[in-house]
Image (cartoon, rainbow, N blue to C red; front, top):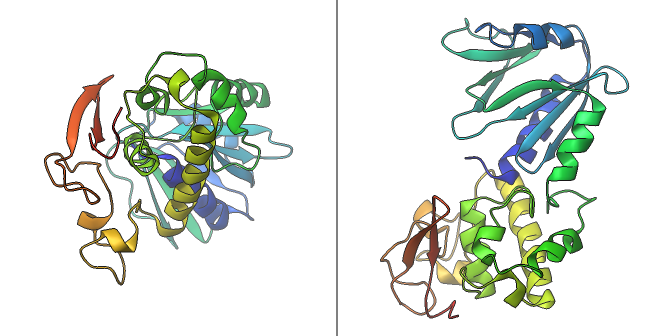
Length: 267
């Protein structure tokens, strides 16, 4: 599933691509025909990400909000000029005279009003990529529960936008056992993790990929990080830890795999 940096990157790209002229909205697949008709002919007035949720505003002031959650299989395809002939399960096409954006396979594609947006934001935790995010909101939940910090970081009502890669990597960089209870994490540790997430997610938006390793911990220290050198523990089960050499561990937690180093992240 795309993590928060991907959605923020998409929000920025769609804003740049479609802002200006009225947008022609259609649903070649037919499943979103009514929703597409409700925004057809309106200008794109806003484009924002909240965690893994994308909200595109059409009309003034935000008369219609298109809410998209890509889920595991959703994706955007964009381009300039004339779009290709619609094929397959094309849920939504947004088109201007200069550009187009196609949406396929989302978990959610629906029209919201401002109140529905407010309710969505209210049920999500703070998003480290948003300027209005308050890490104390997440800390209020983390500090009161015996739920593991590894589970809490993936709970979108605690923290919005973090997925399995960032969860594994930020915990390793903080040297925190993913199974440690939330209330056993100190406030200073949490604020340091938050600051690191802000840094890593912003880097992800810029680069379009997740790189969490420092150059000195890569096989090749100069140049662009190769994919096999991009992470400390994520999907490195059984490989030596880049810091201490201990084999990286993995275990299931709430239907997702944890990755960690038992030495660097000792309980």
